[in-house]
Length: 419
Image (cartoon, rainbow, N blue to C red; front, side):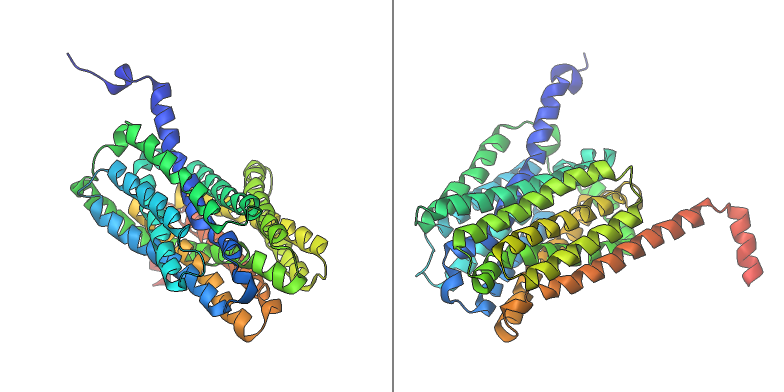
């Protein structure tokens, strides 16, 4: 008598288990998105070298990249769920540890703690991309957009928690409360029996997929896609990392209102992505890209030169709304441009996170040598790079689709004629 898992486990239960794994991107958002507000909780806005502040972002990024590289190897020997549980456990422990490492504890110890936070995020992303492989193969753009939205919600949650707990005048409360998020998902994943998560990655299948990955990585589209994510995430995290510090130093903002302004940015960015997803079928993509980049650049100029908090809040909303459509626009290309393999997207997103953390690190030197008023002009230039790269991706896709539509005999005739 044969048994079929679909006969034993109801489809609704399978979907629920898969949804729990998609929800892991919320945890990643909490882990990666907390630093911008955490710097204010640690009182870094009072008298801290901007270059030292930038190094905190590099520490977070180093942990993330190391974790992804380690997870790629460990997933061949351990189940995907084991790696996810390790990520959640280290996320819980590192956030709890950061609650004990607030000033006057030495800054290198806090950077070490942030490295472990980044490690937790990287390990969890690696596990999520593998366990959700069937979902990505079915509809990569849809899952990528949903994961990005949940990531934004995690960033928003971490920022709101910092703003609310700031009134308590206890730097231990925020990270201690946020540590409950990875703990909750640790419990969920420990009880989750989703079949794709219960085994290690098959070595033979992995070797075949790696060959596909190398083929994709050699393509022009993959290089352009990687560069676009590097600059776009860098632009977004220039705000996410430095907005509260910028508002406090340039406009004399109250620290709590500066953190709330960051929360408004994350809300505009995340909500705008949901709206952009609905607009994509109805709007010309090139026009939407040009309009969104122009709006974001206008917001940066407004933020750089506004003399009031009201203008700053308006600028933050404008920037978030301008950035919002870019990720969904790029995600649309995932359906047709690349074969899905978790290793490929682990590499792509590692490049994106590196861009996200490199921008705040670079802005530390800008603030130290040029002054805080120039901090927001750097991502203004980055937006121009994103616009150029996005148009190049669209052009490459158009050229490739045209080449595929030419019949093979005609293509040979054209080649012979040229020779």
